Image 1 (cartoon, rainbow, N blue to C red):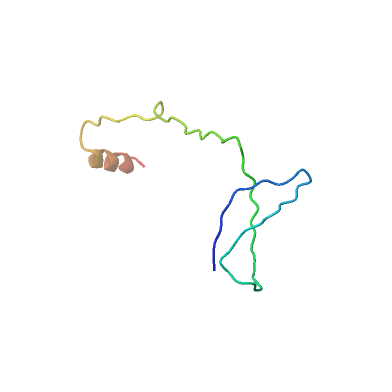
Image 2: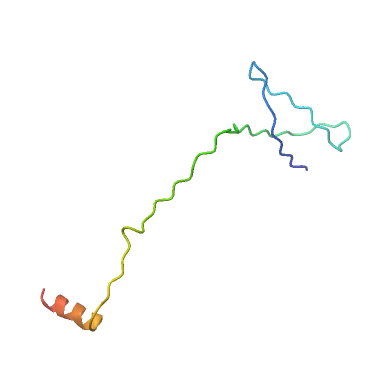
Length: 74
């Protein structure tokens, strides 16, 4: 079994013509074709900058004690 990947063009009528040489002798073969359009324009990858939402808490005291105090208020 061979896996071949190539990029080619279709003609004006949308037909795809393939002429692929193989090392096989004259025989019956199975062929699987996946047609995936190639975009000439790359989609820009936008990554949001979360730096304006990120911060750091400078905690004074024991966080566990404060959590227990808040819980006891319920």
